[in-house]
Length: 135
Image (cartoon, rainbow, N blue to C red; front, side):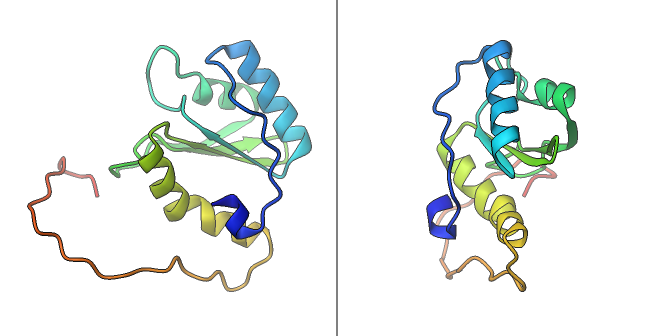
């Protein structure tokens, strides 16, 4: 998804759910990139340290959205770097990337206007269940 946008990617690999390792990776990423993008660790489990570290190293602008899939989504800043913490579920990553991150990256890259995500019509043949208040 990032390559399709023409982003230069600095891949720090998989970082274990360890606060010290995550802090080191966040500091390195923020020092070397304009945007830090992570997947996983933004929910409320005992091994989800991203939101706390973001608040400690920078600022949390928002966390959690009323959407499924994609509820655990964090945005903030670490130094001058923008930070997007995406959910760990691969489908949630894709949905939140295309709903929130793509446009932000294009705007940061100077796109004006930002082209919308291509869409297509589909017919649902089964009833969809959702919790009240979630899109």
